[in-house]
Length: 295
Image 1 (cartoon, rainbow, N blue to C red):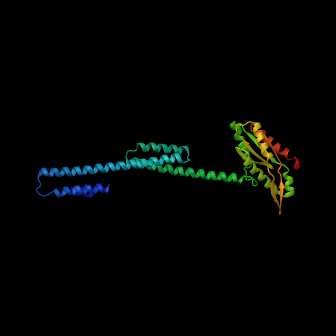
Image 2 (image 1 turned 90 degrees about the horizontal axis):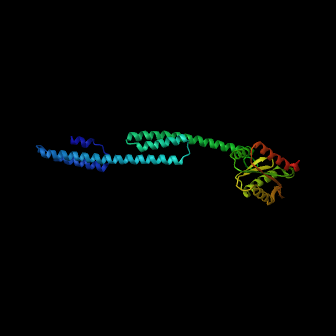
Image 3 (image 1 turned 180 degrees about the horizontal axis):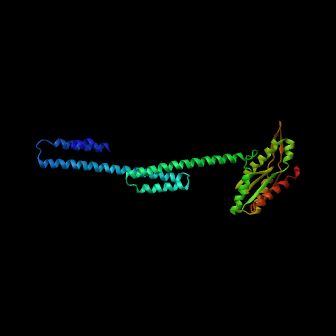
């Protein structure tokens, strides 16, 4: 019987296992023919004690491993919850898994939690991949409608931004700037020079003005931007007027020579209010009024 116990006891920790085998071997060596009954009871007690101690140490190590595995899985679940951008349903599933982890007491419980966690992570990976694909598609669409001359978002995005601001109730103003005599510049120097001037105006506006949204390519020779800073209407007009007054001269290449052009810019500041079609109409009317010299 002792040999059978020694041979078929599972090894969990090598040092503990060797100690247990050595103790059983010692008990077996104490057995001899015609052994006295009292000494037989001593050996039986010694074998039982060795088995009890081995079982106790093995059970303790198993509990420690289970607790450590439970802690690692819980830490992973917590990290995923705080780091990933997933749907509310996926996050709710993760929180439920965290609750299951805290109450898991058996290895079977932990295996079930592991399966739930794997299923949840696979679904979250699919959600994130879909979100990434949609985002890339959205960026591609935005690039497709960007203005080819300035690289700015086109009018559709400008109108969408105006609508969102108007609906929010946030005090804001729309700044529209029109490059005057653009047709004359195109006729004299070529469309490449006119496009270059419009691009330089866009760059100058972005570097010199405190704009919350924009600039956008509005239409023709016009750009539009939105300011939502909590400052007075007159203060904004003063800042834009000063910016336009300080515009530098631009050097543009015309064939093999350079030409100096001082861009003439008309501008206006309009409050962003509902109805939106009235604001859009006012912006367009201003652009048309500034283009009279090109007629």
